[in-house]
Image (tube, rainbow, N blue to C red; front, side, top):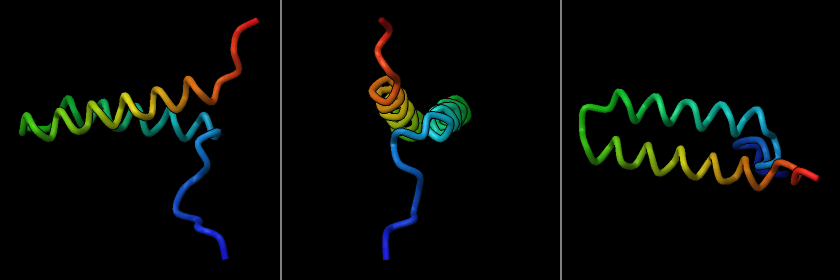
Length: 57
């Protein structure tokens, strides 16, 4: 049995969606620490997306 907790990192739609969700959460979080953590997670998803996208020729 495999872990089905989420799609693989190469699923660009998933990564875009998660980045947007974390950026929105960062904007709306009342606590500065929560804003920071959401921003860090958004940056993580953005980096994974950059790594998943083919390099421009």
